[in-house]
Image (cartoon, rainbow, N blue to C red; front, side, top):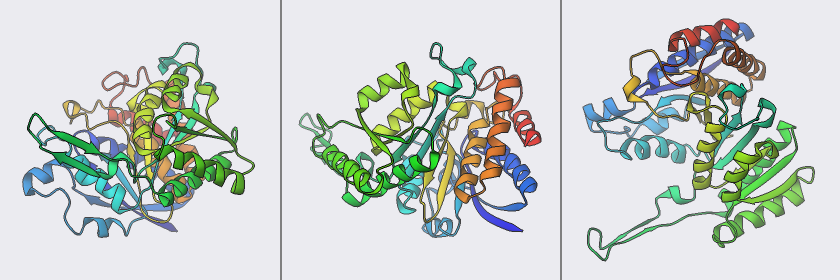
Length: 352
């Protein structure tokens, strides 16, 4: 029997609760399709940091590199200053494991949960490919005269030809594989960010023309992209963009697909260890109450199976989620579903 080793980081707040339901559904899919998932738990997160004053042990990255996939719940603890865990765990893993793609499907399953007027599931079905290792998130820059009236803060966006090209190639390949509209849109700001997005735009057209003539190429400024997400989301198939813009527009994408309770994401290294997570936070006020929506974590598990090549199992999970969302859920928000966290996990697992 085929077996996959998966690292599990439940993390903070409600993270362990939603990961538990994702595992429940994954195990049901694995049993049905004749493969096995072996889980190894890691306790990285706020509680460990408060206990040991260590965000990640030195051995952590090398240990996690042995796994093809990481299933993550949430990072963020109310007793830890913002930025410590996020930079020390999330960003460090994304960078050191070279998870250079952040993949965010934006898909509406039920128009009851869409805040946009008259938009149906067929109108909201696109994917954002976000560069995940460069841009403003590299931490390049610094302070001069910090804490004085003359303070200067500089944050630099770092874009390399290698980093831009590998992100674009992934996006072109993904568009071709998706076989929807065969259209890839570059979202940037060429009229203001005339260095960084000059590189992005030139590479976009050079690669597209030479290697992907079957894929239609379009460009939109990022501010226009957010506008059209709201007015005409049906225009989009696959969008590719840099780290910062991708971070912003994917949260908007989550809202139009129904909210953070249904939004899943993957941090992808196509040749190494990838990490899958719901894109919402740790929601500490709901910890232990069994009311948080686990569907985003379950959909993250579905994405994990797709990347592992178990496409039929992944499809079964998505179809089960769609049925639960359309027929059994009142709302997608925490405490409003009409069912507990564990009951929602049970329903999806049974349908799988």
